[in-house]
Amino acid sequence: MQNVNSNPVSRLEEIILKIKKVGYSLTPQRYEIIKILSESKNHPTATDIYNKVKLVYPMVSLNTIYKNLTMLTSMREVKEIKTLQNAVHFDGDISSHGHIICENCGKITDIGINTDDFNEFLKSDINNALNEDYHIRGYSIEFYGLCRDCYEADKN
Ligand SMILES: [Zn+2]
Ligand SMILES: [Zn+2]
Image (cartoon, rainbow, N blue to C red; front, side, top):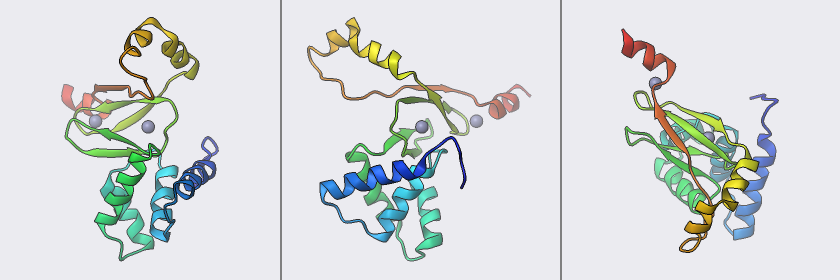
């Protein structure tokens, strides 16, 4: 996959460095899972990842995929996104961005969020008020609606 706008190699290396730092082993299957997550732009499900890893390692189990996703999510290297259909998708891109999720088909699209705006938000009164009880370490912004295809189909 050639994509001039992304830099999958550095994200892949970034996650691998964290894995080594924490002391987890880097098995070939784990490497493949991380590679898929760091290169994917379409927020895959565990099954999507399983089907891709299976092409390289036919003996891999879905359980292995789940274990690795749980590990990466708890390390905060991967984000979980749930659709209204209760499907769980995974995002290897942990940079500041939000999502628009189609209520009908579950399609997930990234929305860019200006990090300067977010830094301003962190300095804002609302955050100061929240910080009396919490130290905020992250956030998630999700919009729900209908994608163009589902909206057009709904109208007819
Ligand atoms: Zn849709
Ligand atoms: Zn995303």
